[in-house]
Amino acid sequence: MTTAPLSLQDLQRRIYEKAKAAPSWRFWGRSVPIGHRETRRAACRMAKANNGAPGRDGVTLEASEASGGEPFLEPIRDAWVARTDQPMRVRRKAIPKDGGTKVRVLGIPTSRDRVVQGALKLILEPICEADFQPGSYGYRPKRSAHAAVQRVAEAIAQYKTRGIAVDLRAFFDHVRHHVRLAKVAQRINDAEVMHVLKSILKASGSKGVPQGGGELSVPQSSVPHGSGSDAGAGQSGHTPRHVHVSRIRALCR
Image 1 (tube, rainbow, N blue to C red):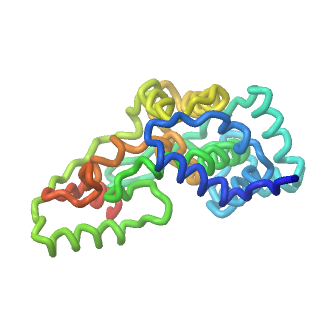
Image 2: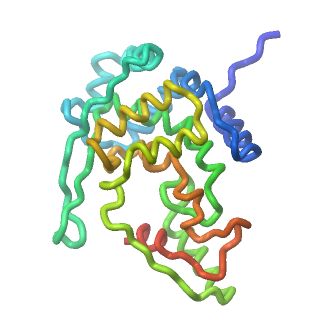
Image 3: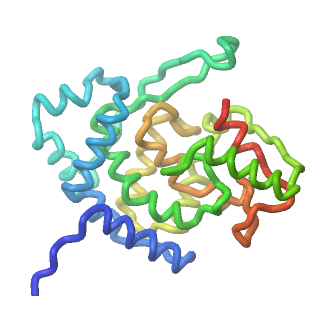
């Protein structure tokens, strides 16, 4: 009997359910669904919706599609399978922050690299979502600053009125690649996936993770920050007596 292939949404749901049911399970074979045409198409739509600036090569996603159309996605798959995919170094762009007194340096990938990163995110994100604590709101789908503030308001109504405000200075600029990759490897047992993730990190420099890719945040969101325990939830999943507001403050700036 021939079985119909899983849709991307069904695949993501199954990955999440497996990750939730088996917290110590290391996933293998993730490179196969990442290379599927449906995944690449969805990643391409994500990149287009983000409407990001072009990377170092100056080529927009629209121009890439116009020159190749659907075949634009095929070389991405071929390079993935052959393990020859090599991200181009990100384009650096400084933008003002803190009222113009400081700057934030963005790392903008090429349109092609955005698609690769988006495909990675589509498959890896359900695994990470299963590991986050309920009180974690940063860099998560279907979560917002407003929802985080609402959670704090509910905690205050329960007389949980002590807060701890923490802000890590230039956090993304100082992330150590080997530490981040080691955390990903706790859940991913796939040499191809780890190879591409390492290449993405190297494209941003010797340390730190790029900000500016939009749909990526693969190095950023592919690992729960301490399994989410820093974001206001205890091991039981309930809001603790001391409500951590560092995530709220960062989201509401």
